[in-house]
Image (tube, rainbow, N blue to C red; front, side, top):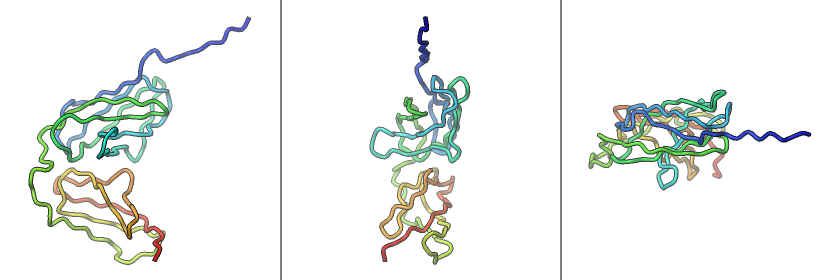
Length: 178
């Protein structure tokens, strides 16, 4: 007689964040286990379940190994002090963990009114790439909004500012209805 064999994971999916507490601009290591083997990460976000979700998914998406495990580094963006959720989806399996931001100057009353961007080249046709350089922004922050002619052109993953509030990104000029 043939008996069907069903194999299920005995280990529920989980992630850990090390160190458990970090300042904006530091890199934390996220380690996951209990996922399906050889599957790429679909989501890696901070505060994914609420307003202000920030994707921190690397350009090269992490894959699980033969044991269903992965390790990836994440640069902590400019966030307020306190507890934040990191959510991961690998294949169709999702899980989350809490980490703490400390030493943040986020919303500290610093004036960023001198923030500016430049575009090179200054003239481009739809389908061409342009470089956008920003300066005077909060350090270690993620660019939250980038639009052109009312069209959202924010790249994914979102660009982040460096230690002095600068960023450089490239966008594809969309077809504008002019």
